[in-house]
Length: 123
Image 1: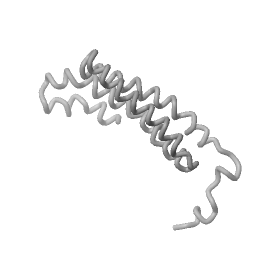
Image 2: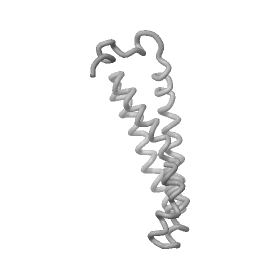
Image 3: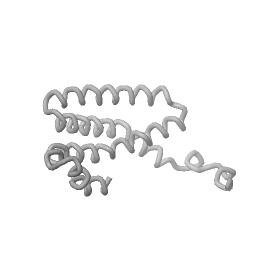
Image 4: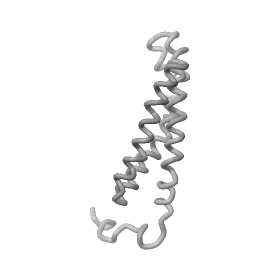
């Protein structure tokens, strides 16, 4: 992410200076918007491990619908910049919806939070 953010001017300049001007902010917002996707991916893993796929699917379906609606509204209001701002906003909301479960799963104590001994010793 950092390399893409720092090298954005260089990469975008391949397509011309006008492209750099038009796409630098949206690319930056897309890069920042990747962070909540990491939480969402971990959320899926946590719910899968707990056998709660239907609940995860419901939450992620709501998030996906919000992404589509946000993309359409943002693009209509302000083009590419509006699209990227809307997606960033929705992804932050999705992150806020999914991160509590990930944090709770990472704070599990006792025997439930430990790996089975045979799993640890397997090559």
